[in-house]
Length: 640
Image 1 (cartoon, rainbow, N blue to C red):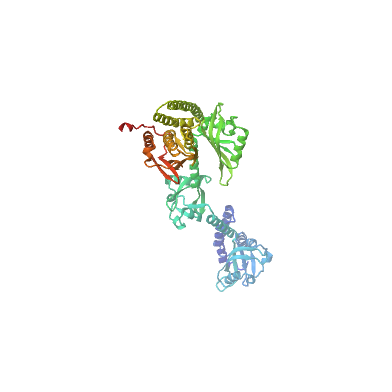
Image 2 (cartoon, helix red, strand yellow):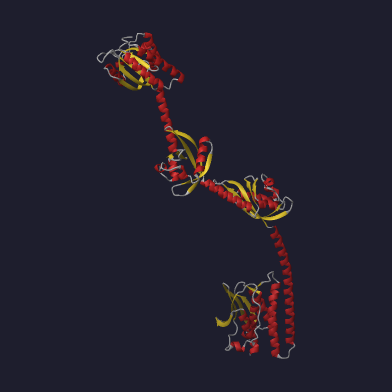
């Protein structure tokens, strides 16, 4: 054992070190640790009571039971003895270790610490030591102290070696956890906030949070969650406490961002310990777009629910997924009776299979199908609806279903049928009226012609012929209306052509007169048509009597020039040129007066001119609506 008395101080130091190590050692359970501490206290008490270590068994007990490695070496650095714990730490055996010269080891840091102890000082070593006997690498901390009776005495030294493996593992784990935490926190795309649950102050925020809120990290650290969440602080605190006790919970909130606007968010979180502080992490998810979409969808569905038009939707296979109230009211099927069924529940049998085949081909191709269809209600009543069926397309351009909007037009169809029937009856009646008018006017005209033939007075005969032609002009209008389906307007060019033919036939002109249509058809309302026909009757009558007199051939042209609402009617002839004082010599005073009166009724202008070997009679006026104006007789002759 050597000089035990001289080793007293070193052993006493060993007791103190063992006590410290036992208190900090994590490898021992509490019961074992307490047992060793009791033994150390007992041995220390015995050591204190004795000036010398007379009991070698007592020393061996201390040496063997120490929780740290103990090695003793001579002045040359050769190991003389070591305990079991040292052997375990190094991973070797007593035979290989005893007699090993420490000063000849490769680890120079260790050698220098041992040399210090041999020189009467304390040497410290800490590092990963690789054993030369077992090649085991162990992280250790070693304290080497001199052994001797005085400062000049050198009897070797003693080393106390502590296995740091567990500490290194713990530190490594902490480092890895810190690294993982840092990586997770910094690189996570999720918005992460760490807050103090007691004060609400923000402990940290990740880059995703900086980007979302628009604040830099230092700004966050001077902010509280109550500055961010605009809801009542008591409610915010309650939500956070719920997250801490039940981490699987989450809540919705409204958070303020740097520009003063707010965003709807969903917040989840839980507890986290950082630097021995109990904190709370918040994982924030921006749901503003989702909330807006849900709000828009809610409004859309509310609009559908309140729509007066029946609406229903189906999936891609045609299974009904939604019907609104108007659908239930029109067809009599409740939501429960409709959802999951096919739209065939409305099938009336009035449409062919080809109709439905074309319908499905259209909407399955992504196009809209619209039209009218006869459906059947739950009570087997038939309804006519105007429908529009539209494909519902998702963000990937895929058809996911269809929405159909119906409009009940049953009453409208019935009313239209009644109107058609009524119009048909009125057309028949108007046709009969025009027919009777034509016949009556033709009868009056014929009687006047007959009276003219029997008149001895030539002047009277001419006047009767003129009046009969005027009546015939009006009769032509009714005959034209009777022969068409439109009783409101007439084809004026066609009617005028026939009018001129009748005048030529009535006057028995010896001139071969041809009629030219120099423009396309023009329509006039009945009143304006009568006015124009009477004016043309006077003009053509005078052309035949005077312009075509003594000529073998002649041409009368009919032309209508329309510019917007303004219309100019031109009757031209290539007969004898106009004589001087034309209006007073050729036109009868009644004829010219009638032209002036009718022109004023039309609010138009009448004039004549010559060019290109033809004489042109022009009537310009603004086309009126279909109703036209009522003819007002001006009693101008009574003033003369």
